[in-house]
Length: 112
Image 1 (cartoon, rainbow, N blue to C red):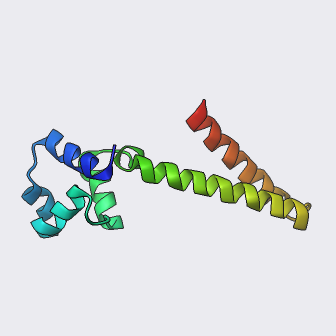
Image 2: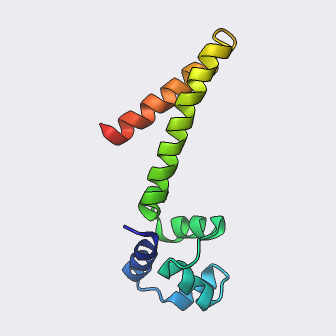
């Protein structure tokens, strides 16, 4: 589901109008409309507002963004683990353990 359809469907589920949400988020209706149509990237404030107002998880609100970010973080974490193993095998063991646990946990959560 794309962000624009997610925002629209969240709002419509509640029966709120664009004017209502724009007012609550302290935006003009035109600015909010751009968020809802996917023509403007939502600010952190808007993201958190949707999460709070509609009780939706970030995973539900931004599935594509969350997947991309998750993949990016896992890839970079794996690279960092390898660097630490080469550069600081003893001093970095706690960091290696944490990152390994993090990567495995995230992988299991979304593939198991």
